[in-house]
Amino acid sequence: MDEPQPSQPQSPKPENPNPIPLGNNDDGDSAASTSVSGSIVSSTTIEAPRFTELSNVSSPPSKIPLRPRKIRKLSPNNDSATTTTPPRPKPSQPPRIHAKSLTCEGELEAAITHLRSVDPLLASLIDTHPPPKYESFNTPFLALIRSILYQQLAAKAGNSIYTRFVSLCGGENGVVPEIVLPLTPQELRQIGVSGRKASYLHDLARKYQNGILSDSGIVSMDDKSLFTMLTMVNGIGSWSVHMFMINSLHRPDVLPVNDLGVRKGVQMLYDLPELPRPSQMEGLCEKWRPYRSVGSWYMWRLVEAKGTPSNAVVNAGADMSFPQLEDMQQQHQQQQSQLLDPLSVFSIGAWGQT
Image (tube, rainbow, N blue to C red):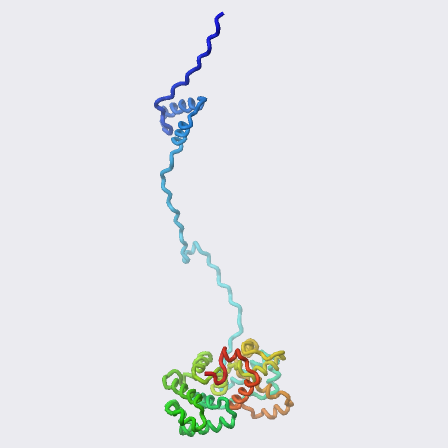
């Protein structure tokens, strides 16, 4: 019995020495490509390098360069890109009152009517006192000279020095920058004017002579600009400017926040536990605008009437005009010695501050 012949291992079929490249769309090439692909799948041994090579062939890298995207900017005038919203209506506000000088016809009556309507507590005070009266004023330069001369003096001493100064200038009409500026400190000292006040008088006259200040400019300036310009003069502080604006220029909307008489009156009127600070006065008296000068006048009357029967106050105030500047200066200086707010000295200025 013949022994079975051992089966000879079949040698693998030789690979196609000329492989057909993939990716050709011709019909003949497609059939050849299918034959090659079938032989690769049916083979039991797949070489890794060959597999990698075929993979690389089937997915060629893209050679198309990337272009950056352009961002289109929309113009604000492009109606298609922007949506317009109708403007919102502004809330209605009460008409603003434009106050004139308190010496203008009917202006004082308008001020009292306004204060009655906005402040019921002040309205009762208005019923108790007669309205203020305003006297005509001399030139602004003469009024400022007088305010400097009366600094830190009693009314009697101030009157004496002022009279001698006017006489030295040849009368009130001679109190002009051209006459005041040549006066020497020695001449002024002989009539009782200190060297410090002499420098204040010369600084005021010099600013007039240089055109920084003038009577016509002072009269036409608004309150804020006038306050800024006058406080540039040595010896004229915020209280001096406020009193000048009320007494000499009759400005209607001036609130002397540093005057302790006005602050005391506000405390009494609104029954405040403490004396309001100058920084609080603006808010407390905001409702008086644009006639805060008249409201301040009633605060002085309220303080004066403290402890006095109401009927006596009315009789005494029948001919009451606005407080004289020299009397107000003396009262203010006495009040400052009793109660001085240090913040007011450094923030806005004080009487006689250089």
